[in-house]
Length: 179
Image (cartoon, rainbow, N blue to C red):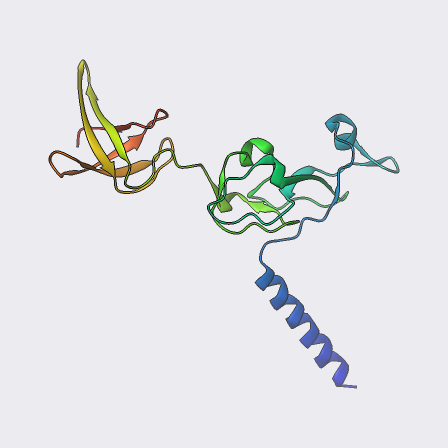
């Protein structure tokens, strides 16, 4: 009589360990067969209210790989299921971003698992600008770390060897401020 609870408990522990090792939460969903968002987003077969439409990987996406829409699959969550907070589900949140860790097929994509593509790579030669009023000073520097637009990165001035911190601009230049 005591064997049943022990084996059941062992089974639950094994299932929990496997779930934790596999990583990520599975998306409880069904594939959207209708590509028109009006129909698939408003109703499922059987006139039940539709679940939320989300994007999940359709293949393994490796760290450092740029996420393309072709690597994602649109699915509709089963009615009554809601996606967890802090997961990226829309095309704008994912297209062109870079995976920070392995993203598995059929699993939600945590927002923390993707980043913007680097605009400047580590070791790249860049133009650095200091602008104050009508004064503009420019210099050539080497980046000491990669960065996306808006990131604060360290650069080394090629002429003086001084290390400066500046903001990566959308055009790939670095803007430093007075310190």
